[in-house]
Each structure stands twice: as structure tokens, then as C-alpha cells.
Image (cartoon, rainbow, N blue to C red; front, side, top):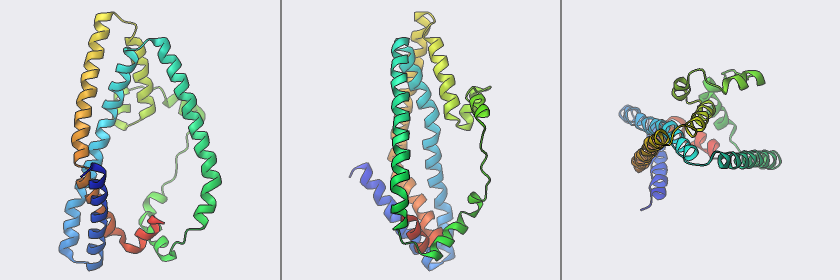
Length: 224
């Protein structure tokens, strides 16, 4: 059985079990969900903890082991493609989403229940940076703090600058850096493989908690 099928099976079984727990309202089962739900959050955290080391090590290996001029050409094309895809997605969403959403029937009671369950998150005021603040934030004063906070863009900028500088040092030291980060990237790929093997369990735990806490009506609103 493929990983995709196992993950989908874990999702369906978790939701069905959660709906059953929510319908029965048995204290023992609710407590059991409370014990299982942290497994899902631990699995999500395990995925997140691999992102920074993997991205950083792959970026260092790719830049240091490649001609700097080639990196510039590839980077320019990548940025152009990235911006083009964002523009295309934004235009397509603006044209297609409103008529599609208008055709979706949503139970008012389920919608109100979902809105109430997300009240804490919805009530948070968004903090919008000015352009100047955003530009300043791209250069981290502490790269380690950027890593700890999961600030990907500042971290990538620091890693890119570090890699460009490393590409200009002596060959022996450059090969040492490349070898170290290549070993890190390969190690992280092995770790990610282990985490993905646990995906059905993590998805089941997350779906179980979702189904138990939200119920059939709210789940229908989310599905719509």
C-alpha cells in the first residue's frame, strides 16, 4: 500500500472516529482524544524542524558548488518565473473564486459554529509592515534567531550571502564547507523519510481531534 493511500486512509478513519466520539459524548473517549491529539502536533513539528536545515544545506551546496555567474542567471530566471506564477494565480483566483464560492451551499448554523471556534484567531489584529520595515527585516541582525523564528526569507538571504562568500575562499576550505553541508542535507533527507513513514499516524491524530471537536455540521462547512 502506497504512502498516499495510507495517509488518506488515516485521514478518513480519523475523521470518522472523531465524529463518533463527538456524537457519543463519552468522557473516556474524549479524554482518549486528548491523549492522541498531541501525536498529530508532534508530527507537524517534526516536519517543520527539518525545513530550515534542509533548505539551508541544499542552498549552500548548490551555490558553493556552482559557478557564481550561473547562480545569477538561474536566480534571475527563478525570480521571474516565481513572480509570473504569483501574478497568474492572483488573476485566476480573482476571476474564478467569487462565482464558485457563491454557488456553494453552507449551513448558517455550521458556519456560525465554525466562526465561533475560530473566534480567537479571527479576532487577532493583523500587523501590516510598511515597505521600509519589510526591507529592513530581510537582513537579520541575528541569523540564528531568524532560524529559530522560522523567518524563511531573511534566513535564505543570509544563507545565500554566506554561500556566495564561501564560493570565493580557497578551494580546500570551500570543499570542506561543501562536504559538511552535503552530509547535512543527505542526513536530513533520511530523517524526512522517517517522518513521512509516520504520516498516517500523524494525520489520523489530527483528523481525530478535528472530527471530535467540530462535529458533522462544522465539518460540512469546511468541506464546502
